[in-house]
Amino acid sequence: MFTNFRSACPIDALPDLLYNAACEIGQITEAPAEVLLTDAIAVACLAVSLRHDVRSFDGRTMPTSIFTAALARSGIGKGQSLIQFFKCFKEDTKEKLKRELTTGQPAEADDDLILEEITLPALMDRLHGIGKGCSIQIEEGQRFIRMMIKLDEVLSQLWSGDPPVKRRVKGVSRTALDARLGLSFRIQPYLFYKYLIKDDGRTYEQGLWARFLLACYDTDRFPTPQPSMRLRGAGTGHNDHLQAVLKKLVEQAQRCPAGGPRVVIDLSKEASMYMRMLKDRIKHWCPPHYKAIMPSVDRAWENTLRLAAVFHVVCEEEGQISEEMVDRAWTIVEWSLSQHYMVFVEAVRSIPKQKAASVDSARAPRKATRADDARRVLESVWNARRLRSSDESFFDEVERVADLPPLRFLRAVDWLVRRKQVEVHGEGQLRRVRSLISRPTYLAYGRL
Image (cartoon, rainbow, N blue to C red; front, side, top):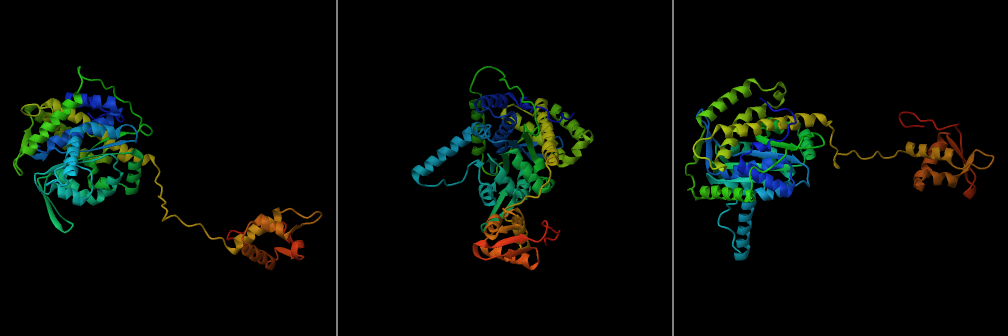
């Protein structure tokens, strides 16, 4: 029922259109399957969620927006995978920027579908109105992590699609009614683990992380086999085909009047039966160790429904959602639960909690006391070159060995003389020092 811990990424559960595009992009970028899987879902979700909702067998209607996160180290193709999957959206943005720079006039409306600025004002400005939609796509999500607590409530509301989000930003009231938001970020595993330890699970308990489809590519801590990715069928241009389908879906959504009704996708009879049984199995047959990630388990059924609808629409299937699409979606969501356990339980457990010492919080070195200087001088008297047939040392030689500023050295010698630890004889260059004790004696509280 539930996938084995640390099983291979089920990228082959993607429908042919998305899978073949992922294979083609993987050959170009050499990105791991975990990154390709989350990027494929993220880009499909962006195009579908603008106009389509999904209805469950119990009559509830919900958005088709999905949050994804990929944990993978830098330099393995995360950025290139993002560029290739979101190629048609990036090209439209470039054309818009060219027109603005050529004419010197900014666009009348900010209708970019991809938002790269992670602030409440930017988000509310983009979604202000009725039925607006966009997607946050972050290549390196460390900065986004720091905004999680601040934006947690807003992001959760936008994921749910209801109630409306109303905020006052920069002195202006902004309302996002029936808005849709997709969110996808990529981050290095170590940085994410470090954040989780510092955060001590607060943001996970708040419920936002539980909504994410998560994929972790960490070969050092969690070595897993990479699946063999082979194209299904001959030919080339699979990503170009995907980009054309995505662009068509976006254009259809943009032609619809603002505030108009969304297209609601229903489950077929077989898919409804599958989802009924799945709900019961998740409730009664969840592995005991998954109790540690119950917020994620509680969201698994809804994420399965949303993902099945995305697959149905992007593959241009007619009618209702098939049982096959639901099964493909559950295979991915089920595996994602194992990733949640790996990251939010195993990764945090395997790293010892250490108090982070910053430059500001680090304790300053203890200032040397007179007793410390005297201890150093006495050791120098003991270690300095002795005069022939004598237990005395030249004063200058002791000063050289002690390596203290002149004033501190003289004060330390005086400290030792007054406590009858050493005695000084002679004048000028013939000045000599002799220890009156057989060896240095140290006490726990720092006195001689």
